[in-house]
Length: 86
Image (cartoon, rainbow, N blue to C red; front, side, top):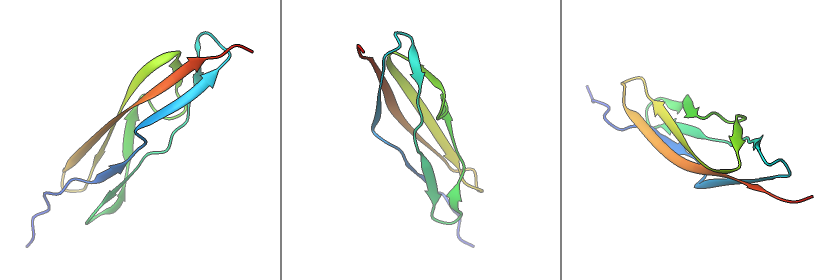
């Protein structure tokens, strides 16, 4: 029996940039996925999630994925929202 100690690999952007005319912020979507050597594609949970409202400025997003054996991977990136004039 081979013991699986390898966590999944998370594929995420290094940063996501968005612009808005609002001084408050904007809903931002991004794509993150994870692949495990044994389990294939596994679920990824990001906080804040894709589609969330991001205020103007920088927000750190933390994503995590687990495989069936409990191996965990974490990836972080920033969402940068800039206010632009009309």
